[in-house]
Length: 405
Image (cartoon, rainbow, N blue to C red; front, side, top):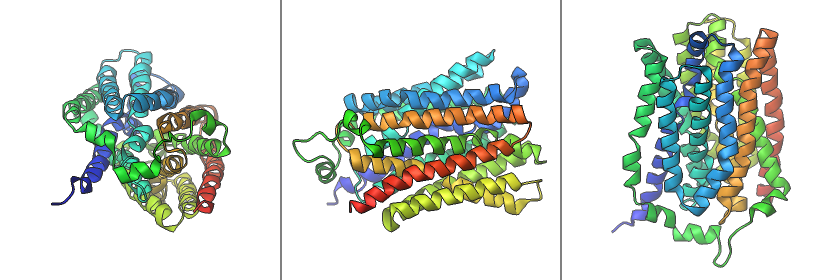
């Protein structure tokens, strides 16, 4: 008889992926809502992208609490918190009558859900079942963001066109809440136990792994945190504005949303591909390749001048899309390999502070730069400079890991 352990790890990857799609629905489709929210609330771009900023900052600030919950209470309770926050936030957003209410529903609540079902949750679940291929497993889970963008951006656009943006948020919110019951029924005691061979490798008997205090005193923690934060600035100063930017270049909103959806389609392919390369070909090679492709994608987007520039649109979708989320699994993998133990959740949670603040500031500054300068050039420069700084931090720790082999 074949051991059930053969299939359980794959099922857990699918679980992390599914929960990721569900709770990322609102962030991944936000770019589609930006033009409608601007008109509905008669607000400048910075005020609308500020909602996204609050969500990203909330993800970061709630990261340590997510780590504490998973270390103390286990991943089930963290998953339930994420689903309730995401679904409830969507439903509340559909009833918003003022901009500050969207900040609470789509900013704070969605931020809490992103912290609950994100890198900390994925590492806590999959880190118990995977060893040599942990990076690839995490990449599949993280690719939920790309698949979610591919599915949910056109879906949100269709729901908006069928009725309005309030209806779209209501449908998305109720859809997330419907997932709670099947999640509760899963065999969580078996999931928490992990694969005995992997658990012994991660944490030898009688040890608890590095503490948070020890991690905070080490350069690798800060290098990975720097990479997390600056990568977030680079991606999120652009992401909430891509649809509006392409519309300003002459594309229809529907065409722009489809380009953004194709970008999302490339994300899971790149996440898995670049992390497979890091697992098999070397972590320095994987990191350097991912950052180089991101930079080329930003340049391609900058050069788009109209709907007929399909080679540039394709280059942006492939290069930027395939690398947008590839660094998250790389950082989480390196952190899990270095800090595995009883305190891993809290350590990863503290790292996400930088990611959340970087994403939040990136989204807000990106909108502010547009309002101040009247163009997107400064936003593109910000993205490229941030990518260079982030690459230095990740390549530093990737080099350390390769020397430890």
